[in-house]
Image (cartoon, rainbow, N blue to C red; front, side, top):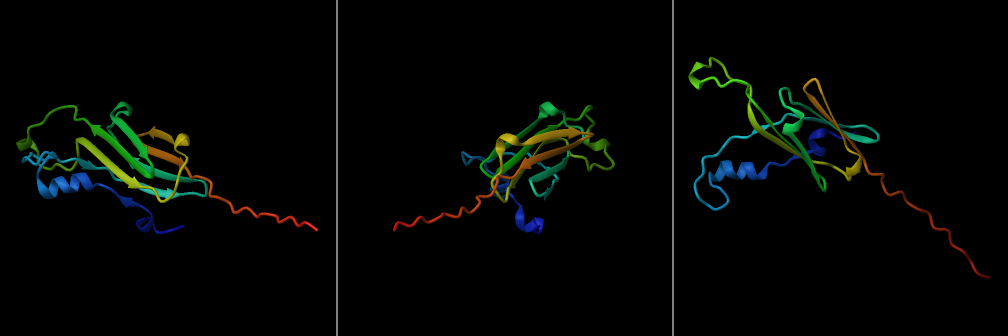
Length: 144
């Protein structure tokens, strides 16, 4: 198996561009709303690619998983039950609000067979690999 850093690349071009430029698509200044980055582990087995993401506090209906070609995107929103004024915080490390993560998959997968499971605040995606094209030996007939 390959080093995961060389297999998977993270795609977040739009949000990075907004942060750098500070403008929306029409070119006017915009107040940039920070979007959280979702932490993920990605590994492969003989038959599947597997994505694990801790998403405690996120409801199933607040999650969206999209696969376009070889780009997998997980989007969601983590809500805060009660509003606490900013000045009352001593320490604030938890992220609430919109988050997303896009992962470029290293190979073709069977998109219709992807399974998503949410258990104890952990999302697990099992993505079956596409069977590799197997070489076919062509027999040559001879005429005499």
